[in-house]
Image (cartoon, rainbow, N blue to C red; front, side, top):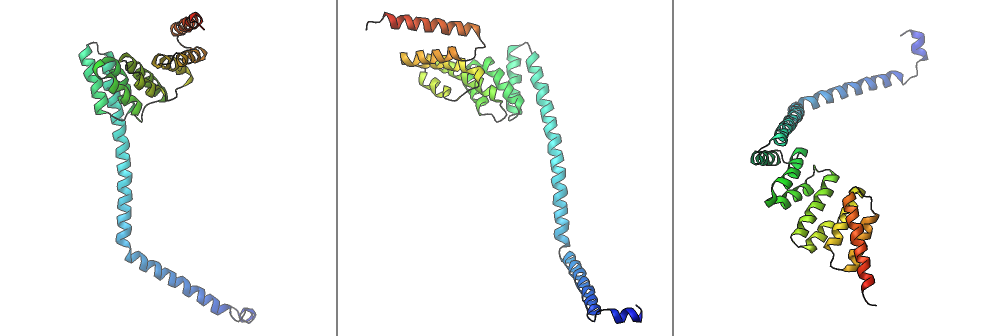
Length: 223
């Protein structure tokens, strides 16, 4: 620095520069000391992070392998002609790959293949987190039909309390009519079934016939 510049420099400037330099040195010393005292913790943290990343990668690969295996066994079950072998393969998918979509689809097949345990299979579909909404709706309707076949109207009504999608509402209302002990409530459910979107012309015709019969019976009763 020239003498002229030194003369023009504010009196406190050299002291400020020295203080700034001292602070930098202190921070460097503190950082070095902190790194030295926490080296083991840092190493442990890095190891944990690496293990988490490796574990996550292994889990992803395992999940892919599981899904591929489930798909293979499920496809084998679908094309199997022997009823007993098909049943055994579907049971294998449901038990060995529980929690997967393939397990839920296997339960749907088992509900038709395994009459003795149909209710349990339908309930498994309803409870499964992997189930699509449509699967749950259909399983509820199928379960209600089983309850009606067993003459357990109260249980059927309890199953049918849960709402379903519009395309399933006609069958739900029809089953509610079948489960009803009150003639007025029965007719109300039949009318709601008739008013709902219809995907089954045979069921629609049956509902219309039942409504006509209810109307004729009502008209025939003495006032």
